[in-house]
Length: 386
Ligand SMILES: *Cc1c(COP(=O)(O)O)cnc(C)c1O
Image 1: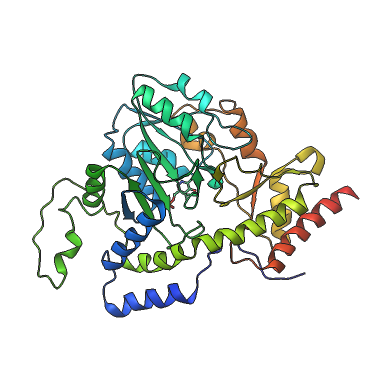
Image 2: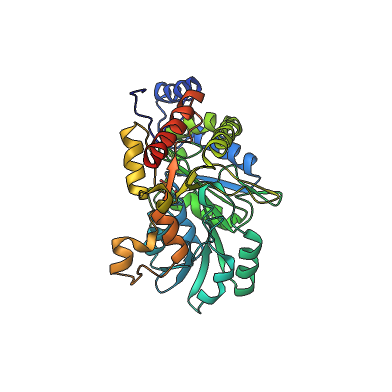
């Protein structure tokens, strides 16, 4: 057995990223500067959005999106419980309350048919999450939003490469927030990007990400001479550094190649695991592109004769790191204690939450690594069946 631990979500960093970061370090310009501007231009071109504004995380981006959209105390935002804590937390940070709707079993995305019954006079926005990189049913969501005059803010943390009905994610909803966290499809360590076609919001994002001081405040120390600045509103410290953008520039130029590699790994898993006591991910929907961020197996505990947690532990013992995406948000301590959610509220999300496990899918994985994962799964299944 190969004794190296296979880390889940290990980023694929090449010499290009390393050299570019070193170039930033040598230049002395570490903070928000020309490389952030270049990365934003590239991202704009890649998505086709009118504006792309870099952040220091997707979480920060979602927070600014909610604020720019005027969401605050007493408002409600409809979202999915099958997501990372950040999605719900930022709604709370804005002063609003997250209102969850259950997901569809096949797509693990919020079920559009369940949205309208959750709309109240306080509802201000819908916040869909493109789970694992599979696009939500944006046609239905945009139609509902239009009918009820709601803003659509997309959590595209998994969805840099996602396409839906001929459009890139980042050009459909009112505002979209992407993540470049370590284990995401495009990695800058920490980092994120907001896209929007709304000029006023784009201006607001640029101002609010840097203390609320006047636009292009980062230029105040440049060779163009010291620029005096003014605080327009009490903003945040959400700006991206050039050191991060240095990675992003090269990661973005590799993003399609990385997706191709993850598609190969995905097909490999499908081919070798679908006959075993798991449910493999459903195929991508017509005229969409799945960004293949997470390969989620659902454990059939009765057939496998062990729970998901036991299965995860057995993989760990065989040096295979995995992830859980996600432990449904409404089951977390705060969401139960303070918001009154409980088990039973969203049965589909809970079932996925109890049975899902994400296998390694980094484009860095060699064929041998992928083989090790498949062998380990087979060994565990085989042992149980003896
Ligand atoms: C990772 C993640 C986020 C947060 O991204 P950061 O860049 O770490 O802030 C938000 N939503 C989902 C669904 C995520 O997976």
